[in-house]
Image 1 (tube, rainbow, N blue to C red):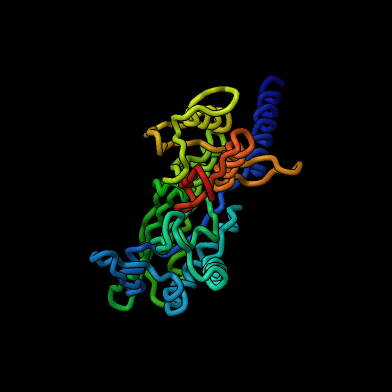
Image 2 (image 1 turned 60 degrees about the vertical axis):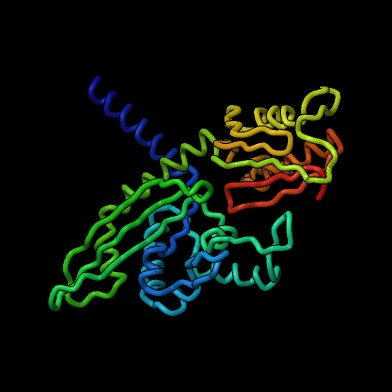
Length: 322
C-alpha cells in the first residue's frame, strides 16, 4: 500500500511539474546567419568609417540570393515551433525593416545631424525585438559522392550580446538529401539541450530582471547640473535618479559606473520583463523603462528630457530639453 501511495505521489508531482513547464513563458528567438557565414559567402557591404574599412552584413541579399539559407533557417524555425518556442521569422522581419526605412528615411543622432552608425544586427532586432538571437553557421562536407553538414548554433542575449549557449555537430553522410534534411539530421539530437540553455537564461531574466544599460547626459545649455539640488527632497538630481532606479529595478539591482555633474552611467540595470499598463500585462523594454524615468523627472521637477536608444539594451536620457 505504501509503495502504491509513493508512486501516486511521484505521479502527482510529475504532472504538476509538467503542467508548470507547459505554461512557462518561452523566450522569443530570432535565427540569423552568422557574420562569419555572411562574410565567407560575400553577403556584406563595405563602408568607410573615418578611414577605417567596415564590413556591414547584408541580410537582405543573403536571403534573396541564397535559397539554401532560407531553406535552412525555415527548417530551424520549424524545429523551434514544434518544441514550443516562438521563432521570429527572418524574412518577414527583413520586410518590416525595409518598410520602416522607407517611412523614416534616415535616423539622426540626438546631439547632431549626423547619421547613427547602427549595426545590421541592431537594425534587424529593433524590429524583431527577440529575447535571444541565434546565429547560425553551416558548411557542407563532400567526401566523394557522399556529403554531410556541419553546423554551429550560438545564442546571444539580444540586449547585452552576452553568450547564452552553443550547439555544434556534424550529421551522418548522405548521398542525395537536400540541405534541410542534412540540417535536421545533424541538429535534431542536440536541439533540446540547446533550447534548455535558452530557457534557463530566460528563466533567470524572468526571476532577476533583464540586464540593460542606462546613460544620463545633460544638454550643454541647460544651466543646471546633475549635482544641483531639486524638489522638496532638496537632494542632488543624480541621487534622486539613483533612488528611482532602486525603486523600479528588480530587487534594486544596478551599478553606478560613473557619476559627474554632467553625466551618469548605470550598468547591470535589471529591469522587469513585464509591466502592468491599463489593466493588462505587457512587455517592458529599455525604451519604455527609461521613458518612465523621463516622466518621473518631468512631473516631479519640471525638467524636460529626451530618450535615445543604442540597440535594444542601452538607452540615453539627455536632461534639460528635447
